[in-house]
Length: 531
Picture 1 (cartoon, rainbow, N blue to C red):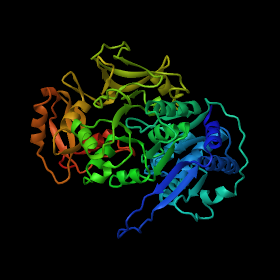
Picture 2 (picture 1 turned 60 degrees about the vertical axis):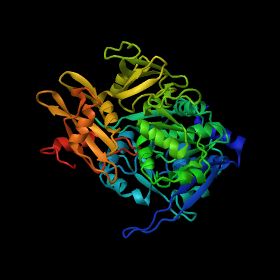
Picture 3 (picture 1 turned 120 degrees about the vertical axis):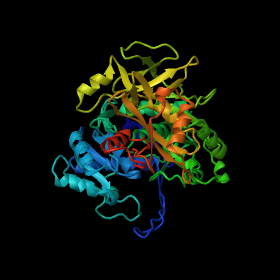
Picture 4 (picture 1 turned 120 degrees about the horizontal axis):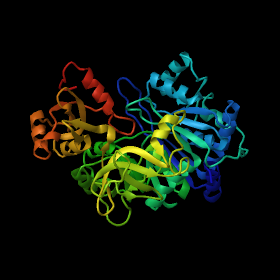
């Protein structure tokens, strides 16, 4: 099976059943912008297959063929999904990018991936035009107009219906590359994860099996499609099982449950940061009237936040762990039986997990070690990093993917995530997990979110600095937080300084960008408050 066959098979099986329900959420007018009206569109399984065939003819007309790479610089919209599966059927490769990327970031990704064509909307055209002016690989920019029934005549949406409906017949292998998914590049240049047909199927199958997804389920998709989570966990699992997906153009904390209820969604995927934003909204008892039977999520919530979520929304949670490189989530809390959502669960699907020390030897139960995941490159784990054999060889050794994430396994086989290896702080010979310090700070009633950073210290290797965002309308003193930590942590783990900030820089899916915080603190003549 490959993605092209999967789309065609589901069209034959489900025909006029809705697969994708898309909404561009309305935006209220401000003094600087005009109001944006609600826009909705539905694609059936048959329409998806038809549009994919037409997109193959369109891409071929642009000169794209097997092995060619094109860029999707798009917000969430049906065109993204059509072009994704058209790449799979054509034998081409899509390279999605964050619509908030700077021109310099885009230029690197486009040139490194050899992308010659880019699809984008008028709202996100500026950075791409700058890339084009400065030379490089990018030759053509195709405008998309996904938010209207009467698109501009030159747009992709207007050109698509004129293309032939003839099925595109181009045999592809399940190990052929479909996408290059660039990692965030927090410590170095982004690395391009090569994703095959088989990889996508593994990802979707792992989640579909774990949550027992059926054809009557509906995924609620608010995370960006240019990120692996929405592609792997939500869209792929729905397609595999003949389920449907309600796709929002963006995440909105204030509208999250309203839209979830409106579209009768039963399954969702989130990260901790947007969940905290949802919890910060005014309580509305009507939001308990949702059909969500499971919400898988990544990154830690506090015990209080988990309780508040269940009390307010009655939407069961299951914490998971996965990476762009692992495809599916290798660790998940189970759908049935005991869930320990302060952990990232147990091994899922066909994944084999081990924890190893720095010498590569397995650690004992209760001891911290690096998570490594056994798999088949190009099938159950990534094929490797695009044009980066050295990084590939460092990451995949004897079919074990070395993740750089540390965890502890308990007696019952649950894994508790500790930290990224790169987030370990060394102080006076001790290894300190930034995540453990953050978890303590998040327990303080005045702390909304935080990031703990290690900065150079001439005497003790590194000093511990906590950057804290207080909850709206609340204030707290730095000394109070330091004392709060001192009551709950060993003295060498207590932050030496607390810095207050209104926000923390984040990726598109809410991961805190610690390298930007660290760079800002290092550049300051002295640590200011607030930053």
